[in-house]
Image 1 (cartoon, rainbow, N blue to C red):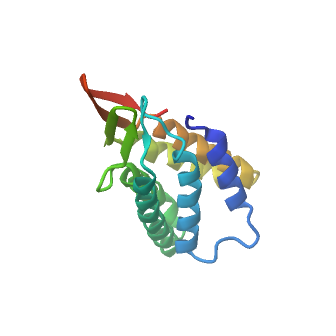
Image 2 (image 1 turned 90 degrees about the vertical axis):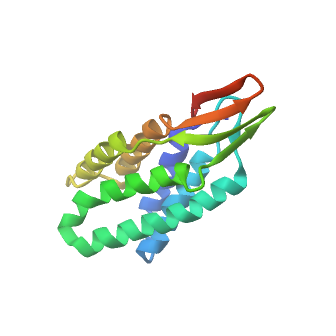
Image 3 (image 1 turned 135 degrees about the vertical axis):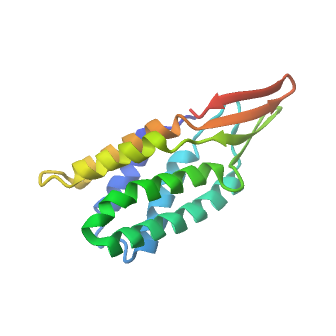
Length: 173
């Protein structure tokens, strides 16, 4: 299997069009985290795949961090849009890097996430959120923008696999 932006886009679109929407920032954070888990669980790093228990722990922490970010953005009012991108980027970086980093396992290989840089993610999320403010923006279009941003960024996450020949660093696919 490999990461597919369409998987994340579909889950976010369902979330963004849910009636009723999540009842709280915490519920929204958990729903976003569940959507990302559905996407991230198909990641591969060379011959290795994420350890399910590592993804479960990362997802719970992601939901908490996203909920806190949504709460802070709502409390800030109109100014919240300017801070949400950095908070979300930090939450997604921490999803992969933890502590502890997400572990991978495969035939004769074990690995850990060793790099998940937030720089491009902050700017790209900011652009997606700004585009979503347009009067003609739709929930499915916003889901597509955000899924695309997260997918492109997730493909930059690096895993270092321990193999019999020594360590090998590979991007997520």
